[in-house]
Image (tube, rainbow, N blue to C red; front, side, top):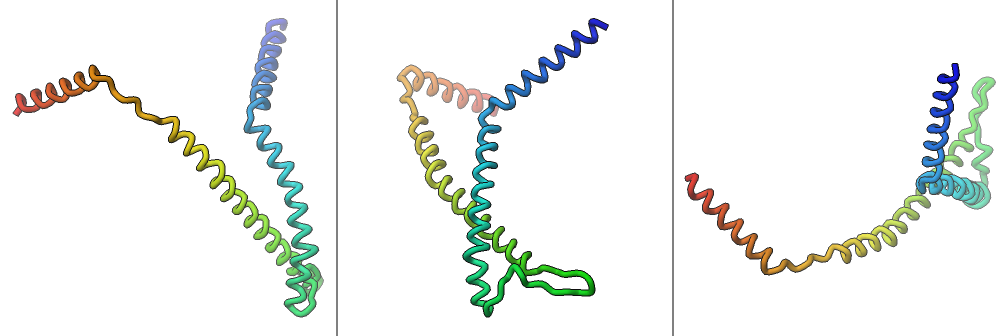
Length: 148
């Protein structure tokens, strides 16, 4: 019975250590920040769609409020205006994310590539290394010509 308890404690300790390692990784923290910022960003985009774009589109379409557009079939009320508004909301969020990713890639990825290219600088070979390579190549040629 004691052995079982000790074994369970070890498993739990290992689980807790694994969880600590998981939480301490940068990816989890980045994801948490992304979710929080994404939630705030969604509120901004939803307000843009609901308070600015949808009324403008409604004016263009003859003064209709898109969110109130619906059709009644029997007892069912199909609110297609709300659906259209959600599509507009999605397209704006997708476009903003696209622009943000383009900006990040252009600014940060190119900068990292340039840093990486600067880091990969060929060191000139010493005369000894050049001589050894020449000898190696001559031996390869000699070996090929002896096989034929």
